[in-house]
Image (tube, rainbow, N blue to C red; front, side, top):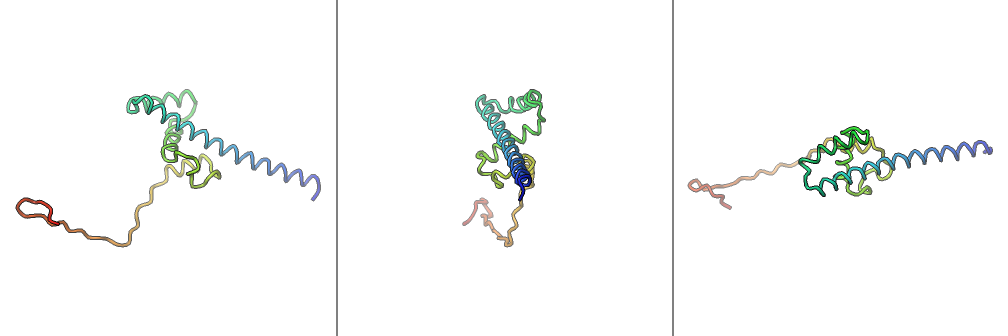
Length: 128
């Protein structure tokens, strides 16, 4: 391998690592944003009044969409610790939002259990 090829390979690695680090830092920053907003709501004990207004105000002040702030809040609630993320550090904000908006899997039980509840005809109390 020539010196030039070694330089190219080294620089490619540098770019890949920087991209990975920047994606992770963005995810970490949105997680922290969600944490701080959740803590502010708890601190003021006025979430029902304060919660939506703070999202609107923060969106305007931070020049982010309200949806992004809602995702950040939901992200922190669903994953209070970043190491709980299924993809670990190999994640992007796009993947996080997909995890948050993915439909929950419905139970696929194969067996059905029938339950019969017996009641007294007069007083309607359950009979064991």
